[in-house]
Image (tube, rainbow, N blue to C red):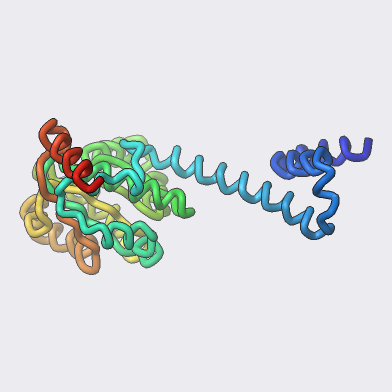
Length: 254
């Protein structure tokens, strides 16, 4: 039959969703009342949606997020100093479009990594590429790349990523190679892409953590000016009492 040949050609052209939508229309006589343009439009919409979903799935897989987090899952009842309007505004990803950075600070366990992954998740779902990596792993990967000759390729990959999440920055004072590796990364991304950094250290302490004045100035000058800053407070979310107080607060609102 002609329809079977058409379906085979759609599959050969790698249009599986279009083929499925075409077959669906053949199975549903009630769609015969639509005009030609409407029926074609429905099939094109099905293929477009399927492609967007595949692209989104690939972006999320490539991001390698530490947590399966999304902004909709944020526990607003927990007292952590989050301004809901600011978080939702950043959730539009306008800061990524503007190539501005986001710096999230706070004590261990308050949810910095979760929030960072939630922003990266939103970025992937909004059509941007993202990459999550802990700072120690970043230094290690760059060091290995220098040794095996893939440094330029790795640096290019990091530069092309729309949102680079560097988690757990400043857990220990930076060593000489680490300072220079970090400068290479932030220099290539400066005003070209957005970098999200989480740290237990307040931003004003970052100069001392870098520990070399010239490189500290260069790194911080590419990260801090014009960046959005969020400082999280409260108890560690790993503390059972923090969870229970959050649950009680939510119950009171209900």
